Length: 444
Image 1 (spheres, rainbow, N blue to C red):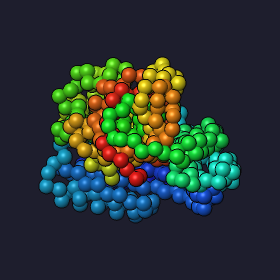
Image 2 (cartoon, helix red, strand yellow; image 1 turned 180 degrees about the horizontal axis):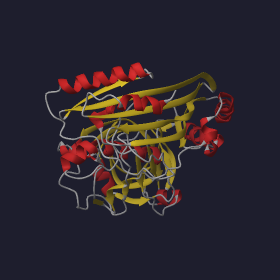
Image 3 (tube, one colour; image 1 turned 180 degrees about the vertical axis):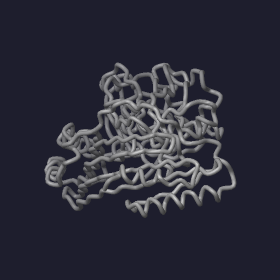
Image 4 (spheres, helix red, strand yellow; image 1 turned 120 degrees about the vertical axis):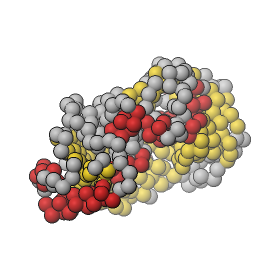
């Protein structure tokens, strides 16, 4: 398939004022396993085209996977008709071209990884669980994608990247469970025995769980749990869209100290430890944006639409047109590391909880950053600086702002967390929070 030629076909359509075309190629080869056995191996390789047309200041968008001249021309006509049918002007146009940085996010071995290689890695993952007589489930995928953006304003951008994504849940015979994951541009960085050991250890240690009363506890959040908290905060407040809609907890707080001075959080699309991207889905070069710097609220991310409405410039955080209701959005959030070792994080806790991860996270009150979620796959009691045993899972209802204001120690090591999804990532350390609110019990 000659994508570049199809871009030219789209831009040749002259019945509109401006036209932008985005082509997304996603290639994934996925190996799933359960009960310590591989049960599925699938592969997909698809290119989708999004055409956005401007007519008299109004916008229409069409999407197609028909990668032919006829299919592209048909979509251009649909985008034109939709634009003409709009009743309101968009008040922004396609961005002008700008030079994007060079980003190294491609690994040939990961792109060419075979089913037999993934099967060999999975066999190493499940070996310990099989010997222990417990269930190991999860998936390992390899592949990546390409992005092309072209417009009548002169943008012509292309990038490609690779991804290896792994998730593993080990379930014991008495309901205990443990979790581990891995994400990287390079499959060669995946160490299956290490990942398996982490999930298996948590599952076996949580077979005997004691009930615990909801309430306020000091917590040590492991990296997946930290990523969920930051992901919810990103959804509720790190986007200029939510700020313009007056739904962001950032409103009225920019320039103020609102979280612990230990906390510095930003989006860094160029971070080689994340899933870097040189430009967004409008072809605008990506920029590093600070949300909190030493506790002070500093900024939000923009796409062209929100930047125009705010009288500023895009930071390169536009999503594809299909997700315009959520655009702009950070994609590579970083929490700066601290200086504490794992033992030091625990040593500061007289009585508290160690949380592996959260699930079923939902917003409650975006203007205050309040979220609800449940612990999962390994929640442990900490007593006198030591992990003393597993506890039953709890429900959380907490403000992310309040939680981050109570951070009193941050781990020295960072980890990339994606939850097995390759759209974006979180490069985060473990975190200790003095006061964290648990509001109920849960059976999962």
